[in-house]
Image (cartoon, rainbow, N blue to C red; front, side):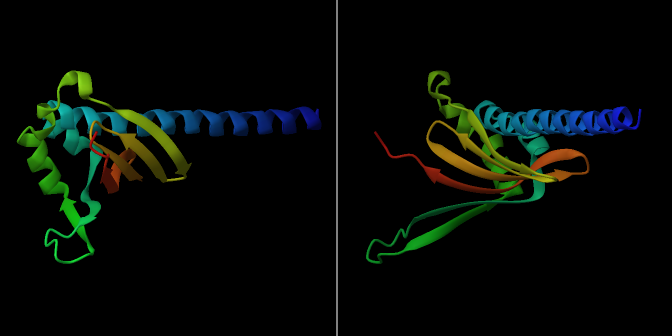
Length: 147
């Protein structure tokens, strides 16, 4: 009887871990998808729901002063990303070119790393569980090579 109780306890504990992980994976994927689709739709409300208010989105690029052979760090925050979404920059991408491939790279307790491939760039996102919801807090992105 004692073995049965121990096995039952282990089964319940494992089942809860798997269920939690599946729920987290689905919520993380939904957050990244809402980010991508919100961008393409020009839907700032949908985009805002995915972002932490202290979001920082960065990319490394060439210095615009071509006399210098160095990189610069481009940075935008929550308000700037919402402004670009509201202006409909993502709507300029034709539907047939709109890519939104989402790969969850890692989940650990209240944090996750996600790769989201878009039409012209790739985002590497850090998400945080914030007050019960998954929010994007950091993004490092890079443009795809022009074909």
